[in-house]
Image (cartoon, rainbow over all chains, first blue to last red; front, side):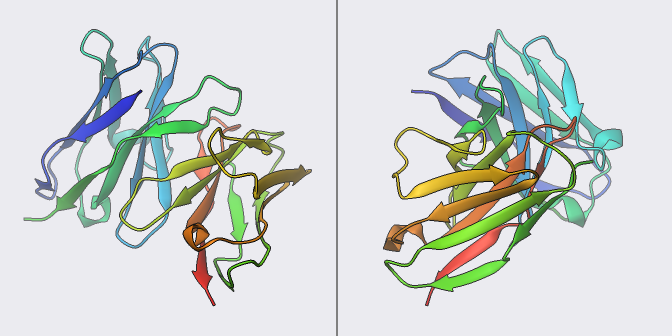
Length: 119
Length: 107
């Protein structure tokens, strides 16, 4: 059974960099895309970006200038870095696997990591 | 960016009712549309992918359909555990997007 677990600091100061790690167990990193999605308190889901095993990443245009998503297949980890954070980046951050089917449905999700941007 | 307009934003219904939720894409996305259910304090759960294929383990009272750029999630005979928030997601464009969500509440 595939398990996905996000980890990282729960609080980040404004203007600093938010860093999260997603660790995958019980399944292969390949051949899936690995996605990051966030949800601000009381709000809807926002797709942030995804990365493939070869390191190719695609980002949401609204975050692209601040975002970097990488993959380490040997450690079975996917990392997210978001620079210059503000209070608007406070959210639950989810890591999710995309199935290989054409519509790339997100079939396995982590439980989410709450990140609060506050001084 | 492809925009997804989801309606209604909220919906009240009773156990046993049939409800429908719609997502309209701003351009053609073919069948690259997935539906998720989210309950408070939980991660979203995949219900339907490729517009109409039921994810394994999901009850058959959930169905998905498409007509052009309009996509519909139908739930027949609502059960107490179905009261949740539902999201569509398009995966055709370079950047994927979710609908705004539909909160399904008990009447």
